[in-house]
Structure formats: C-alpha cells, structure tokens
Image 1: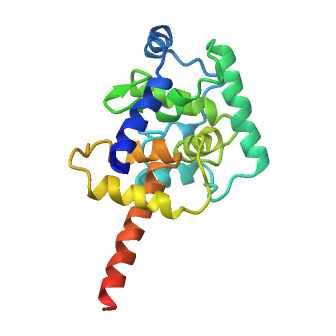
Image 2: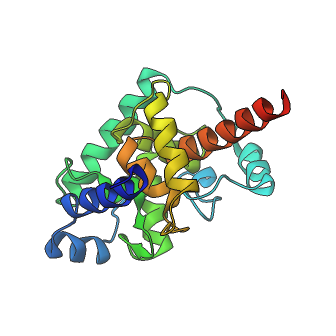
Image 3: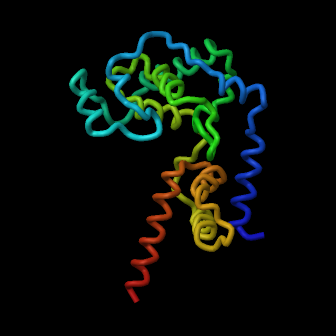
Length: 210
C-alpha cells in the first residue's frame, strides 16, 4: 500500500479511536453553556467566534471599547485559559481529558455542539479574564495549548507523504485532504497547507534553474 493510501487509512483509524460514545455525543448536542460571568461587550461583537478572524468592522467596534492585544500569549494568559477550561468541565460534568470535540467543534459535516450561540458561549467562557483578546484569538490559543501537535521542522518523509497524498491519490477526498494529513502528522491543517504551498514553490524554482 502506498503512503497516500496509508494517510486515509490512518486518519480513519484515528477517528475511530477518538470516536465519542453515544452518551457524550448526546450530551454535547444538548449542551447549554453556563457562563461564570456576563461576557464583556467586546466579547459580544464577533459573530463567528473560533472559525474565522473578526472582520475589519468587528475589530473597529472592539477597539472603540478597549485596545486589542495581539501577538504571543504570556504564561499568565495561558494559565487563565487552562483555569477556564477546568472550570468549564466542572460546571458541565465533562471529563477534561476529552478535549478533542472542543478543539474541532465540528468533524466534517458533523457539529459536536449544536448551534452557533452555544459554540460562541463556549469561547466566551474561555475568554473570561482576557479583556484585550478577541474570541478568535483565545480559541486558537486554546487549540494550540491542548492539541497534540508537533512544532518542529518538517521531515523529508513528511514532505513526501504530503506530496504523494495530495498529488498522486486517485481517491483523494477534496474535503478532507488537509484534515487527514493533519491527523496523521499531528500538525495543524494550516501548517500542512503552508508546507504544501512551499514545496510547490521550491519545485517550480528548481525547474526554472534548468
């Protein structure tokens, strides 16, 4: 079996291993997020918390209330997010080890937490105590803190797997092409996408030399 076939197979095995029980699935679908405190006005602005960055208009509204803090998170901010996650789990009778549904919020066409309002309230819960961070920023920091991802340089074997899976796979699922690689290589989808773009650029530059 070729590497690109292995990617789809391994990704499927990982999904099966991490598959939620029917009880947990129903609990998430019926979830009503209880907030510790009322969200700050700036944390009510974003309409698609977590999935997309705030629009220019949303950023302008945020900055009319308070300044936006950008860049790296410090240890105190990380501790706030970790504390909020633990409190969320305690309040909602959820095992904190089962973090994956909250890292994805949805898997393919399946939504773990039903309704945009509850997904937004979850991110608002995480953002409690971080008044200068956008919800989008907080959610992605949460994902970086809890996802089992590599931060090291790409290995040549990984590059080969990326190219084989994306370019030599007759059965490639266009909707899952980066997601499956991300699961198998334990990297984010955006890092896979960026790496593939870079590999194609290097290949083109190499051809132009001759």
